[in-house]
Image: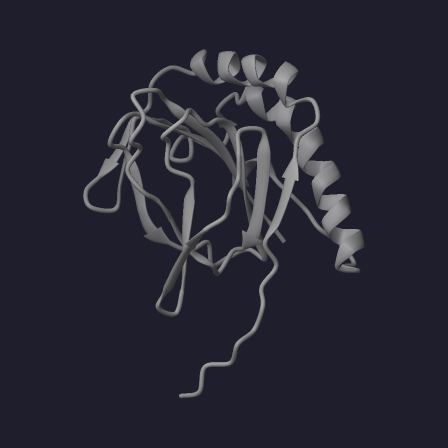
Length: 173
């Protein structure tokens, strides 16, 4: 098999109102209670709602969806796509305590995946990607949204920080 060197769409955008939004998002997430997701060796995450009933009240979604909708419009215009949609079923948060991780995986049922780095303390792992035999990390910072192809192999390596890392992930097509 011949491997072709093709570039993929990795997009990074800073949320302009992040400093105001951060505390509201964290408060809304904390009000949902603690829902650990542990399935060794796939993932060990102190708190997430991705496995909860889709009808669960996700107050944080009301805060972040308008930002993601604007991002989707930018992506639609940039790539000249006819339509792009995000549904709350495809929106979830994850919180990582020290040592928590999410092993290598893909999001095969969507065109794009996104990660909003809500709280990224110093020393916390960012997202690592693997393409063929190369591993790389995008230099995202707190307040950034990273968008990448849903088929991109990625992981969150163990959190080395003593503080909680919080992200909001989403898929769209």
